[in-house]
Length: 174
Image 1 (cartoon, rainbow, N blue to C red):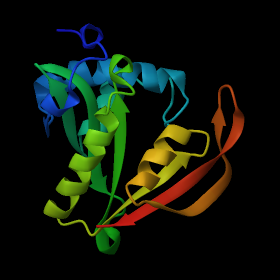
Image 2 (image 1 turned 180 degrees about the vertical axis):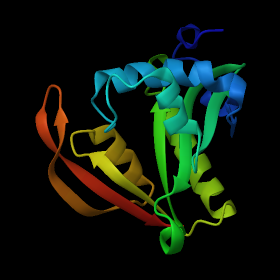
Image 3 (image 1 turned 120 degrees about the vertical axis):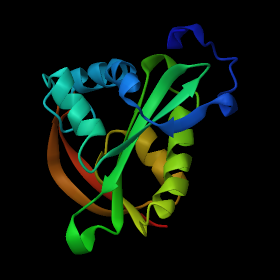
Image 4 (image 1 turned 90 degrees about the horizontal axis):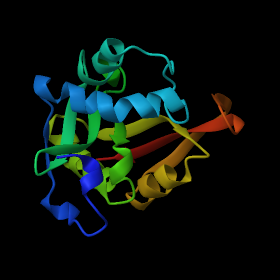
């Protein structure tokens, strides 16, 4: 089943969020590829290879998850330590939603899942290091869930349409 088959009528509460498995990698790449290629939200080389993108998202210290409904992966997120060693008690996450599922609560459900999962993994806080100030939907969602803007990096990201934009550092104690 393809994500485009879900109209505005589907009830996102039916979605199951689970740890990503090897067989999810093709679906994760389907979500990540257009986001990374657009170069509008992640500080990732827009020409990143599939293997490198999946290694970045799923491997190393990153634990990847997928949000699905009826076997169709609609979103993915990762959670990892924000820093190593004595900074490892604060986590960082990255979120991506399939284009056909945007605006339907997928990111919100993944955020809620991550906020529940992070303390279970031993994290005491969550920090987003590089939220683009022009990504107003993301900033608004994170603020609704209690994240504070604790820093601003001026002109940190060269957006393909908006030029140099600020990046925000957002934080929430868990």
